Image (cartoon, rainbow, N blue to C red; front, side, top):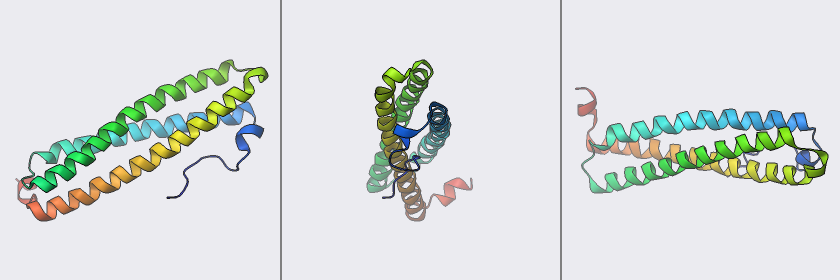
Length: 145
């Protein structure tokens, strides 16, 4: 799968200004807050239609995707805490601890990129299974009531 890193070039973190890293970190926070809302919506979607499913295979598929979405929600909350800590580190950093901060920045960016890939995959799986379930469980009748 493609890379979702925000970094424009491989040595960007080592050579960038503090202000640029701060802005990039603020973008991460904004993106994570969006994903938090997105995951909340996806959980609601699973909860709303889960009760109408009769076929055990469909139930298992939806349950599996629902668990992955719940896991991603917890990861999102953890990443938001870490991004806030990172912003605090940035605000209190000096040139002496620049290397440690930049390493932390790179690791956090990699984890956020992996998180984004997982969320997109979860969303895709949920939409596929929702479409399949609606076609095979005749949920249309329940939705029109």
